[in-house]
Length: 284
Length: 123
Image 1 (cartoon, rainbow over the protein chains, first blue to last red):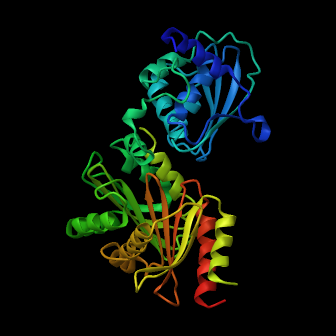
Image 2: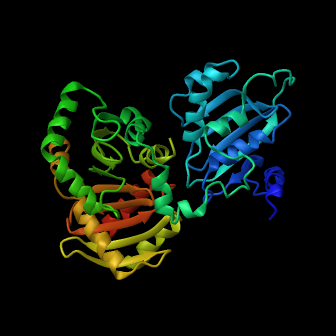
Image 3: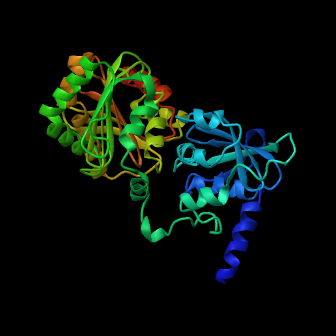
């Protein structure tokens, strides 16, 4: 294909709305197999000139509602299943100071390995605010996403030869801390030793101290146990042990990029774990 | 109802399940398995060893100290989730499952607990 045609084809494909239509008229804009659902989200914004409310739902659970006009994100109207969204939700109009927070929200809401659906509705007011908000081109630049690339070809295949490696590449150094924070208050006490989040902890001092003492004496043993339960020795893995994982307590141990997370869980953690893990592993 | 049929019903109820296997942990042996994907004998052997390793020290000791003996283990990696469930009455009996991240883990755990109890009791 002539390279000059690629941006035009990308635009045409992004405009092609006759993809899968789901419940409530939602369009699937990224499939489970797509490498970068976030790129699909940004392309939807990039193709929205008139004022629209775009409600995105990831198959992993997170939901974001954005007010969009003139290829700009004007407001974050709602965010479910995404941590630390308050600052953007409280902003009357998103501006430069919000861009880093918004990027983190967009990343957390579009984990790889899950489809992404959108429902578009009129914004319900004039488009006189198109000169404010955050330009999608700026967000794309900061995220190193080329909006003119054909959908589904966001990253060269040679960089990610197989699915497990692809997911591994997506993990940032702060994944363990994100995992802990995504689980929320059910994670009563936790501590990270090693890696980028070394020394991070939360919970009652006595419990954290006990976890620290255990890691001091059993850290190597824990890492060896994780090697034995995982597919890839030394790789990213999480092990949770519980009486039932639906009530009572459980212990959690996770490893990523040289860091080891140890924690104590309480309550119905089975409901939380897969999504927290998926969000933590989403590119940060 | 046979073990095969019982396991088949779990897979039918949870499409995100790639494999459900009934294992004898003491003998490190998968006795019955069913799944959407083909798994080699080596993969099944590895799975039962991973189940044994999950209920091993040092995390096992910490768990016993914290809340008592664990009977459920979840291993999450980048390419999926493995769930291991031990029988509370017959400690060698276990279900070993491989699932996608999108599975409703709470509902799945409840279902396989019921399934394992049924198999272990010979029901």
